[in-house]
Every structure is written in C-alpha cells, then in structure tokens.
Amino acid sequence: MNPPYGRTIKQWMKKAYESSLNGATVVCLVPSRTDTAWWHDYAVKGQIEFIRGRLKFGGNKNSAPFPSAVVIFKP
Image (cartoon, rainbow, N blue to C red):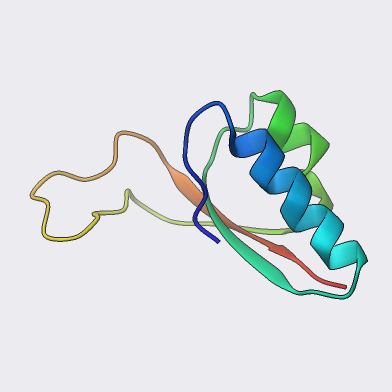
C-alpha cells in the first residue's frame, strides 16, 4: 500500500492495521514521520524497515523531501 501522504494517512494506516487483525499481510510504503500521532498509533504496531537515503519517484531528477519507511503488518 502506498497511501496518500497527506492528512488522510491515519485512516489508511488504521485500515492496514485492522486488515492485519483480520488475517491479511499488509506492506505499507510511508513517510518516516516518527513525530506524528498516526505513526505512534499504528506504524509502531508493525515491523518497521527504514529506507536508507531518499526515494526518487518515476523519472524525477530530485528525490523525496522526506525519509521513508516500509511498515509490515502481519496477521
């Protein structure tokens, strides 16, 4: 899952976490926003892998202006 990186990310992470409680494995590519409520409410409940460096999306010359992480929710 690659949720929108705006204000709705909390709802996306909640859905991902709840889906894991119902038997799904959900892999989330998210900004590493360790200072936010959604991170502490949901991301910390999964397995977190921090991505070294900054991601580049598509053919863009510049990288993302924030660090990223992969959060894995398992059943």
